[in-house]
Structure formats: structure tokens, C-alpha cells
Image 1 (cartoon, protein in one colour):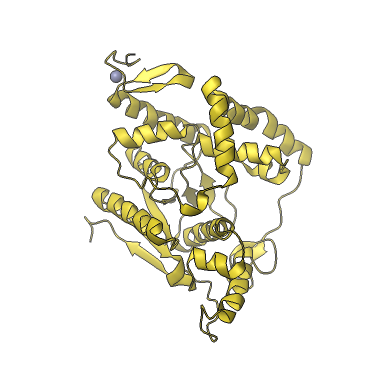
Image 2 (image 1 turned 90 degrees about the horizontal axis):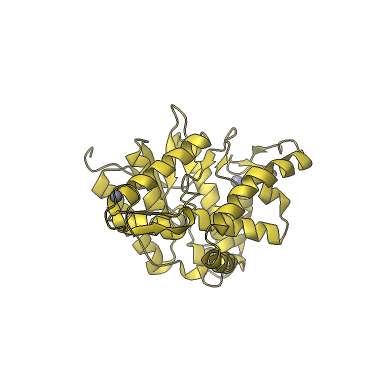
Length: 329
Ligand SMILES: [Zn+2]
Ligand SMILES: [Zn+2]
């Protein structure tokens, strides 16, 4: 198999596209496809300030690398979840990447900010760690973006992630989630625009880019992810893909192109009215936002179990740590 651009021996085969590339042309193809995704959906516009959610895994570091290569200045945002060594290594990989490239990084430590790690939060609320974790991440991304003056939040979701989410939503006919799913969600007052520039690449393609670009990422999966439904959906789609290359891409892209517009029109609901949370000031639909409610509940129970001192009240303000690029410090 030879590179479809220069004819040299190919290093990566993109079966669903019937293409193969040498290392150099694979990287060029990947960056160019990302540029096309951004352009096609007008994800990034002049004057935008971009915050990239960076976990330290391959997807988010590849996204950060690609945005930088395309000339988009983007600040990294890492949330230290406090999930043992896994979180420690995630932070180290993220810091090393930022430091080596002179990129600005913002870090929020959940325990330093709110008093409990994600596992302690799960323990105190009796809910699965992933639900509190997802809620905290969404909250912190929006809040930090607003407070630090960013109007765009970019995440590293790839085709496998998006196709798995779609399959999950279709399996349960979650119409609200189906209508909102997509590579770009417009921003509103107090809510940053959310973009997923890597949504057309499979996980394998992102991993191949990371490898060829020499990106040192954290390979380890979160210990809580084991048994997650998303992995089951990915497994099912992976089997279909093996038998029928291109299935994931057709499933997602044709949904977005053909089905979602009809669904949007059929539901024809007006925009949900948003207001500010009485406790923290973040945008929400109720009087008190889900994040403040969750932590209030966790505090009440954590005090009973003496995980927190009796007189400690929940303070919703995150402690933001800004790590300046090394070459400016
Ligand atoms: Zn080539
Ligand atoms: Zn709140």
C-alpha cells in the first residue's frame, strides 16, 4: 500500500475513505480535514477566544495541537478531578504538553475549589461517579469560559464518541438530546459556543495522528469508565464498522444532514428560557442550578459522615490556576 499523495510506502490506511498516507501526508490530511470541519460549520469566527478542554488523553491533546497548527490561539483548560493516580498522571501529561509548546493552561482542582474529589462527591451523594463528574465538567467549562473571557469551548470528541452518543440517544429516543447533538452548539448569553472540530475522525485516526506527531498522552482510561454504557455502544458500532467500513460516518453524518433538521422542525420548540442561579450566578433553567443542588446535597451528607467540618458552607466559586507559557514567564 502506497501513499495516495506521494507514492511512498503508506504508514496509515484510512479504509473508510479508500486512502492511505505516508507519515507526512497523513498529518497534512488530518490538519486539512480539521480545517474543513471548522470552516464548514463556521465553528471559529474572527475575534473568538477559544478555551480547549484538555483531559490529557489523546483526543484533547491532538485537538490542541491541531488548532495551534491552524493558527488558532487556544488556551487549555484542565480539570483536576482527584481520581487517584489516574488524575495525577492526566495533569502531568497536560502540563508537559503545554510547557513544551509554550501554551497557556488554566487548571481547576475540584477538591481545592469545592472541598471534595469526584470519588468523594460520588460517595457522599450515593450516585455514580460519572454523573457528578459530567455535571461538574460542564459547569466548570461554562463558568470558567465566562469568567475568563472565552466565548468558545472546544472539545476533542471524535467520530466514535459522537456515533456512540447518537446510538445511545436513538436507543432511548431521547429527542431533546438528539436535537442538541452536533459538531457545533451556538452560544447564548452566559453560555459559550461549543465546538467539536475532530468529530469526523475515528478514534484510530486520532491515535495515529498522536503517534506520528509524537504527542505524549495519557493512555490509561478513567477507572470509573469500565462498564460504562458508552463503551458498549462503541463496541457494537466497532463490529459493524469492521464488516462495513464507513458505517459510523454514515450513521452520524446522515443523521445530522437528513434526520436532525426534520426533528428540529417537528419539535419546533422555542428556546428554553434561561436565568441566573440564585446561588452562583450561572445560567440555568431553575432557580438554583443542578451543580449547586448536587453540591449542597453532597455537603449535607459529607458532614454527617465527617468528611467535611460542620461549619463548612459550599462556595460555588472555582479556584482558577493560570499557568503562563514558559517563554513569557
Ligand atoms: Zn506521502
Ligand atoms: Zn448554581
